Image (tube, rainbow, N blue to C red; front, side, top):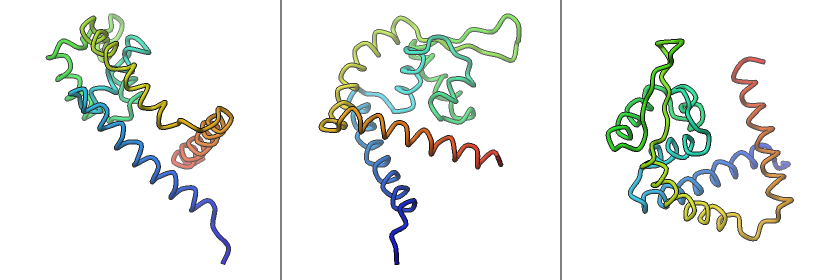
Length: 147
């Protein structure tokens, strides 16, 4: 029986993803944060002010759960909400100066952990991984949407 490379690629991807997530979760928890808190702050830090929906899409947390996380971060003074002047249904979220200082402290060490995970892998192989995963992600999104 021939080896099914699509199935093998899927299994390897899932196992690698799980391993990477565990390393990242441990790294972030070493800074006294939950992964969801860090992801939201990091998205706002790098992208600036976003709507709740944009934050949810950026960090892959559903909108029901994200409100709870945002509430906690707002109580800690790490982000703040502001209403859209043109549409009362839209709420913007932005990182505060205190949140920026926290990410300024945490992010360089976090980035080093990620760099170490990819140590010894050529730039060409990293680009290949990025391109292949984008293709798989786009295909899965199209299939999900029924196209």
